[in-house]
Image 1 (cartoon, rainbow, N blue to C red):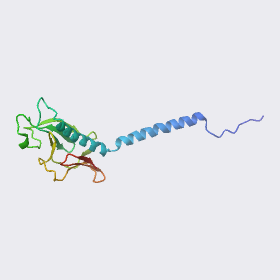
Image 2 (image 1 turned 30 degrees about the vertical axis):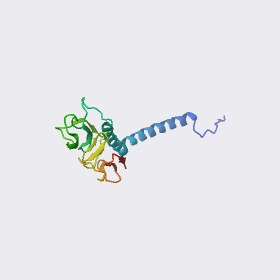
Image 3 (image 1 turned 60 degrees about the vertical axis):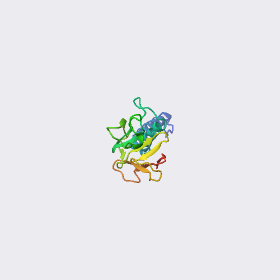
Length: 181
């Protein structure tokens, strides 16, 4: 009696599909986990720049706050991971040209505090307030308006990181230009 075996030394199509499916699932899981673990400094810097631009836009448009026209809008450092936009005092009751442009809890109103979306991102250090006074708007950096002064630099960094590799900088110029590097 002779047995007739065919020479089938390859993989079946079903075996190949199962192996490809398993490799795909594992790859997807690893890639999605890796992307969540990456610190995205660009997103953090864009969040800060957007908040500064929001204050600037509110000043340009002379947006009313709480049924009054404020003297302007500003951007305020709270701590390493928090910042806020604030509205200046009521233009009808204050002399806007002589008011302090830096945030003052007794005169100004916080529009809300913001936090970095990734807890691993923070400011590298404190910085002065940025204030926009309509209608031009004039840009005050630490309560000073002078087109000849240096830009205000805000550094956003990865927690525990070192600059320049783990940092992004935002420069706010006296002209109102906002630049991310």
